[in-house]
Every structure is written in structure tokens, then in C-alpha cells.
Length: 120
Image 1 (spheres, rainbow, N blue to C red):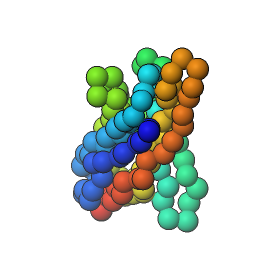
Image 2 (cartoon, rainbow, N blue to C red; image 1 turned 30 degrees about the vertical axis):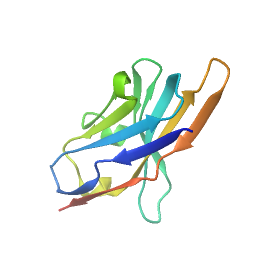
Image 3 (tube, helix red, strand yellow; image 1 turned 45 degrees about the vertical axis):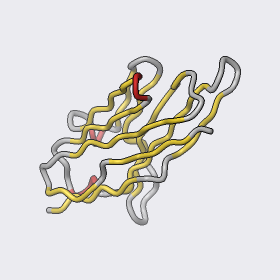
Image 4 (cartoon, rainbow, N blue to C red; image 1 turned 90 degrees about the vertical axis):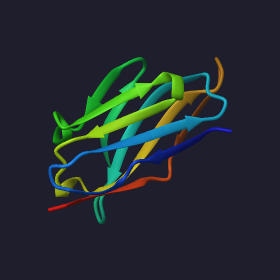
């Protein structure tokens, strides 16, 4: 069956960098769209970055120029490179994947989340 697993979170100082990974596994025929979302305590979940189809990308205004989303099709993995991190980037980051299991069947699921903490 299909699964999504995130990794790469941790504690960094302001101005530092982290790279998050989102790995999809199972009977995957095609990955249609993958998005990174984050949620800080007492705040609503927000979209951070997403990659659609082959390589089209979208970013939240607050992370443009600092974060980059990319995809390794051979590993069914999507990365989020985060540079120039700020304390306000502190949140639980979750990956959402929409995949095709066959030509006529799709699946959408979330990973468990990974904590990113940026200290000042």
C-alpha cells in the first residue's frame, strides 16, 4: 500500500539551512503533485511549496527566494531546501502527495510530519 514519510527536520540557528525529504512508496505509477505544508502552534496550516506534474512549482510569498522544492523521480522523493531560515519558520512540516496507482486509480495521503525549529 502507499505511504509518505518525511525526514530532515531539526534545530538550527537563524540564517542556517535544512533540507527536508518526502519519500513516497507503494504501488506508484505516477506522482501527480506533492506539496509541503507547515503548522505552528495556535496557527492555521499553510502551504509552503508544491511541485506539479513534471516540474511546475509554487511558493508562499514568505519563502520565495529562500526555499526550493525539487524532485528525484528515480527515488519517488521530493526535497525542500530551506536557506536563510528565520525563527518564524519554526513549525511542523508535512508532506502531501497525490499519486496515480494505475491509469485509472489515484491516492492522496499525508506523512507524519517533521519538526523544524529555528533559534535566534
